[in-house]
Image (cartoon, rainbow, N blue to C red; front, side):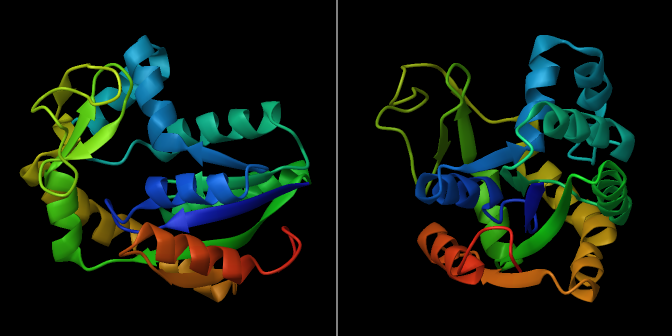
Length: 222
């Protein structure tokens, strides 16, 4: 059976970074970033990518049906006995319900834990509005916290660094507004199901340790 664990939190809370740290410690876990999958679809010019583009560039949420289609297909082609660590999904109550329905109807998995990364909004806005990315290899930097050695040039591959349209300050603030209206209610959704685990998200090391401690035993057992 699929054992699904979810990283939940506001934009910039460190879901992707924390997931990467967890996979380093537990390479048997499968990191599923719906954000990366959507961006790859956009770059390749697929129908799903073109559909998602108009929402992503505004910092708005991609429609639930589009995201769920990508997630379901990813699970179907993956190993049945794996632990899947979801980063960026679900983002709405409807997505959570669709995921639960898919797992229940397939009879192949369940959501065992949902880790809520908690970080102050002021910190998150600073994190995101200073983020820059390499066009070639996708490496992420920060203008203040982790600048490249040479301005505008990736340390890893020498590619051009740029700021994504969804990382400028105005769009970041809009993403928070969308999150607060549509995503924050997921906290209650998963708390009611007794799978929510609050985690300090200010530091990757702290978050990774807290999550591994919470798992505390055979993966897949609550």
